[in-house]
Length: 311
Ligand code: BDR
Ligand code: CA
Image (tube, rainbow, N blue to C red; front, top):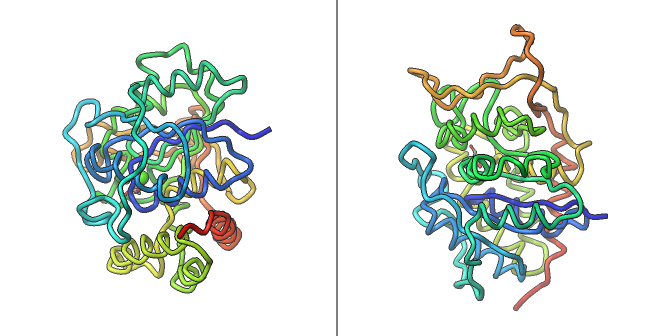
């Protein structure tokens, strides 16, 4: 029995790789892809999602979600992902269109139709997921758990305290973390350990077919920013959230209480993780701290190798 999942994303280089990992997995049944503004505007993240999936020969339903965070103006990340949001390879325009329903309506439909509980995999700001929970709170029970990329226990990447996805829409993150739905948080603590190195990018490039070459080109662009950031490789943030659902034994997680800071002078968007349980409050998330990096990379390479060669 494959695990039904919905991926909510903002491609984004690592979102794109997360999508390819998910669609290649025989363990997952990706029922829908919903798109949110984040790394770039919604118009661009939607285009990137469709162009990528079309190029990879994937057929699925894609829906457009929120154009901006619940209460704030949108922050984007062209420094990391370029002007298009998916700078590097040149992808031809998609040969399909998004569905007419909104992201929230498509998620609702999948949740209502699925016989099994569905796993949500958000890899961007949590706006769409929060809107789903606000609009249809009765659907919570149909969500098995949420495996998300966002936050950090120790140190941010967009401010000293905050990670990008949570910073963009902290009010949405607060709604999600307070929802009572089981959460697995893949924050920077683990994703910075999930780096891909130059020789591994070459391993991907040397696989046959257009998808691996395209991924290598994505990683060439993505690496430039991270080398400047002082990393040896590039952190594969978003693929962690997918990889966990495929094989949770790759990760070391700790059940902890996590609050979201929405009003800090210096700390807005921080995930305040009660690492030492000083509040005594019950855990609302499993926070990932480590990954078996080599096995994770092997999983990715195998997934990319499974795509049709194309012309
Ligand atoms: C997160 O922010 C985005 O730039 C990436 O796609 C990832 O989801 C990392 O902080
Ligand atoms: Ca992302």
